[in-house]
Image (cartoon, rainbow, N blue to C red; front, side, top):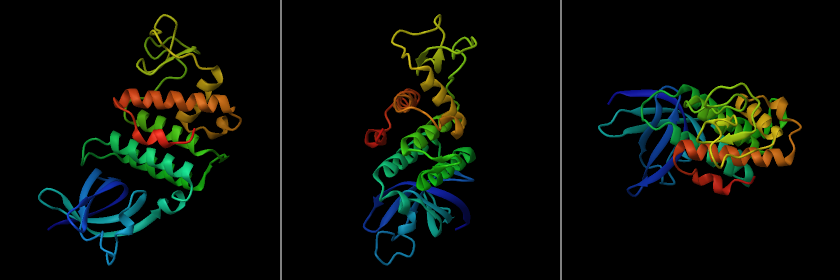
Length: 247
């Protein structure tokens, strides 16, 4: 069988037969992949531990009829080792993996930007340190969620009206409308977050960590709630992992 190599982050696994697993990954060159890892549930497996969620691996696969088969796996980053002992970071990481899985819907479709964003976010989450110093796991997660949605074509607006483009700032926020809206476009039930919250959301979307340095606790909580609502609306369903994230 012909083989190929790629770098990938393991998103999830599930059992197949008595000793095998199906591994779902987000790869650099081939987007989302599902492949069979044979014998990895045996204690004698030479690469079973490398193919667990959060594993960042250099992987070789053999092309199969229905699913490709993992033939080699070399660890590039073992993000799980740094996250599993810290509940807030671990649950934030689980939400990142679930989001990546949802957004990379089509197997085999290149998703280089999503792959790079996920690897970078997991690296920051594991260290707990951004380019501007430490930040809580929930804030790192919110930045990842907003930026991954933007890459997928669902970029929210936190300044100009998302519907008519009227120059902001505006006070109302509607996930269904695509972000902040002016008074003329404001749907019923729109939220009215504090100006500090919208400024924080804009900084998280841009990955501008210095602007998040002095964020107040209320703004951080509001930003997390609005980010979750926005993600849920555009994914058409909840991210199950968000229920376990400490905010």
